[in-house]
Length: 261
Image (tube, rainbow, N blue to C red; front, side, top):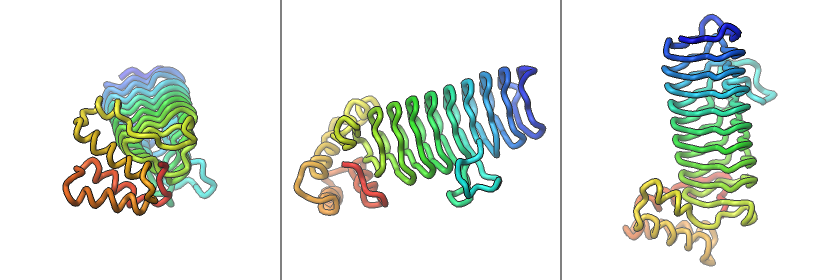
């Protein structure tokens, strides 16, 4: 274990021998690091924070810090960072609140770029990329394989569906459809499926064809969202649409804030 002498490691913190802690870091008493983590320099790790194996955290990041919530009174809430995730410069990740489930999570194999803020009780899936300046209010859910571009705020309690791609500067105030491309350049609307991303993730041509057909019903028919959902579900039930479209239909059905389309 290599810990720079300028860093402050509070008694109780668990740091395996395989980890490296660079200069001017502060690690609190309830922090647990996995194997082979690299804490580069000027990093603050606080709260009941569990960090997985092979995580790299860059300068001036603050992970597991107290939530920006006036109701928070120091309760022992938590933060978890999954294995093989990279947290870049000046990222802030708040721990949870008792009213929001008590834990903030970031999944495995994520890239959280500079100046991103992940608010309390947010849940980030696996293989996500949050580009520079992404700002998540509390209680945001981001499913697997999502990419957010730079400088995009996301409202409290919004959910971003799996495989979605959000363009730079886009303000999210409702749920983002799975597989979608959503951008401020299209008046903060979804404008089709993330075809290139889906192909890279191994979606078959037939799956992409079905998703396009479902999106045509949702976006380009004269049906409202409830009617379009019923039409899509009918095709799922008949076997014309497969499991990828079934997931899309389920996402729309359980959305509480409404979906961007």
